Structures are given as structure tokens and as C-alpha cells.
Figure (cartoon, one colour):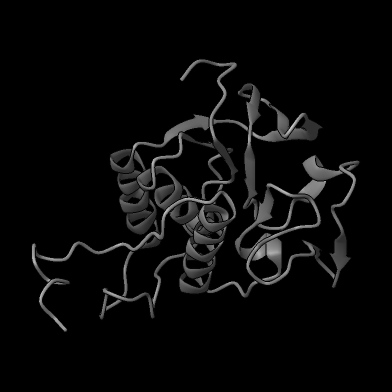
Length: 197
């Protein structure tokens, strides 16, 4: 994907919520670009407990590395950079970042609690609770069609598993809003759904 690419989905933020959302959208066949400054707060932690699949806990840097690998395997592209501005352009968005400028149909904002790049975008409501969050409908939809917020930026708790779950929910919501076929993340053996009455 070139510097001035036109992905279907641009994910701003490469933490747990953003990477999970990008995995779902890329696996569903949407060209997905993650633009991330590389500073996920999770990398600063010594150990992560209570994340499903890791009964003894997991090194948070290892978890993010595994998510990076999963995003790449799903087919999403990654760029190092920060969001500067998001503006409406036709039925989509023009997104200015330090990594380049992009046109996209959908934006998932997943940058913890730094919504400055959304300033001036009509329809985006910010909520100040000591930290500034983007107001969403709970499934990640903002007041702007095609713009979603995931994880901490959407006011979700700090727990990594909550951020991952919300990133997945936002992506599935985006896929439904885009009239994509129902998406599930498991593969059934051939014949599993036949001859079951």
C-alpha cells in the first residue's frame, strides 16, 4: 500500500483494541491500514493477568507482538505515524497522519484518550470525565457515519481483554453497517451444518 493509499478501513492506534479491530476487518476482506505511533501503554506493563488463553498471565509486549503477527497474517498493513486530522470527503474520509495522507471509507479511532485529530469533524461529540472520550452508541458508532471509536477512546475500562473485545465488536459493527455477510471467527468441519434437522 503506497503512502497515499486508499484503504477501506483506516485504524488509528495499534494497541489491543485497534489491532483486534484491524484483524477482523482485514479477515473479512476489507483493505485495512493501521497507523500507530508505537506507544501502546500496554508495553509499559510488567505482566498482564486475566487475559483469556494465558492462565499464568502473559508478557504484555509478547501479547502485542502476537497481535502484530495476527494483523499481518490477516492481511492488514501497518504504518508508523500519528493522526493529525480527519475530515469528510465524499462518502468517506481524508485522514492526514505523520505517515502520509489517506482516503478511506471507514475510520476506527483507537488511540487511547487522544482524540485531537478528530477536532472540527462535525458530528463527533467528546465527553470529558477527567479524560476526554469520544461519545459512541456502545457498539463504537459515533455521530458520523463510517467513523467508529474503540477501546479506551470510547470510554471502555483499561483492561486489555475489554479493549480487545470492544475492538472486535466495533469491527463486527462496521462489517454489518457495510452490509458485509455475517462474520464469525471459527471454521466448522465440512458438513457440520448439514443434515442437522
